[in-house]
Image (tube, rainbow, N blue to C red; front, side, top):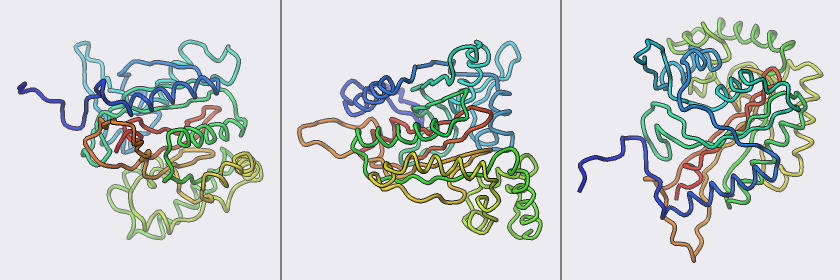
Length: 315
């Protein structure tokens, strides 16, 4: 017996893990049907790329990234998420000159240092949809409909979707000002972690897992301009049929970590039903898991929802 084992927080995917491979095939087939093209980016990037896009005070940068200095004295980081690398490739290779929007998807491993837990790994595989080059609300609606259909095909039934908006570049500064005033008026809620995030970007205080801060803060929807309100209404109307059939929940404030624009959050217990004729075994070492995702738009870049095959393949 070998003394070597997979590092903590990782797992092997074996030929006999049929459910895992069925999830991958289903994703690939649906992406093709929806007109999304596959993209592959390096497994590591310059550290500054993630510091700029995620924010130096974010949990990803501050606590979770695998960063190292190579022999050329360059700071590099294993890919913690796919949006920044895909956006970098879009700019670097001049994809703005091609028909817009560019609809790209990636199925690749991501790396985040955190305490391994139920359905949570330090190396996890993730599906990312990125539509770049269009501000049309129909793109947001398409991504939502895509994931609704994907979960249906995979037999996942215990999930919900929450929609929200924190406005555009015109009305968001007003909300940021209100939020700062609210934090100044409640110093008892501003601990060291919240103060650290607020110093970089006040909106990142919602990364702090504090139910008091999340529920008591001023609502973002009350200050939306008409354009932002119409955008949210357009997305909601387009996905209305999916909401009725799939049991989607109404919008909720703070339902996603987003720096700008329309946002959403998927959550639930991703547990496909077992088939009697199947003898599939999960590559996961846990029984059950919780999946999550986010959707955000910025300067025409859609940060699409994400769902991990690791999550979907959990027994």
